[in-house]
Image 1 (spheres, rainbow, N blue to C red):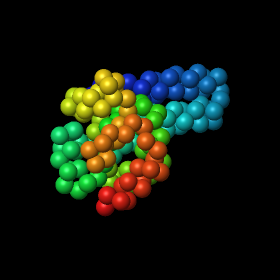
Image 2: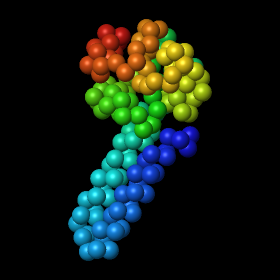
Image 3: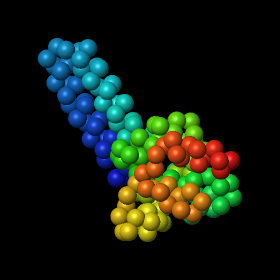
Image 4: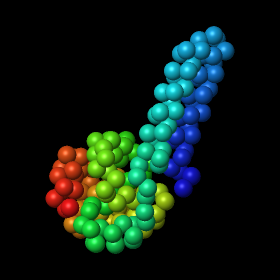
Length: 145
C-alpha cells in the first residue's frame, strides 16, 4: 500500500521545498502557484484520482455478472492516468484493480503480459488488452451495457 503513495509524497515534498525557498526570497505569489501545481500533480498521481479499487477476484466476479471490463492499474503510471482522464465519467463504470494492493491482480497482469507487470491491462470479455485506446474502451463499455 505504501508504494502507491511514494510518488505523490515526493512531489509534495519537492514542491514544498521549492515553494519555501521562493517564499523566503520574497516571491510569495510564485511560491503559492508552484505549491498548488505540485499539490495538483501529486493528487493526479495518487490512488485518489482513480475510482475505488476492488480485489481481482471480486472484480472478475462482478465482470462476469455485469459484463463490464476490468482495469488493472497502479498509482504513478502515466498510461493509467491517461486512460483514467480520457475515460472521464465512464471510468466509474469499470472495475479497477490496483496491482500494488492486490497480489492476485498483479499475478493476472503478469500472466497476460508474459511475466511483466505492464499496466493498464484491461480485460474485456475474458481477453486482456494492454494499454488500449480510451476511445476503443469507451465503445466496448457502451456495448457491454
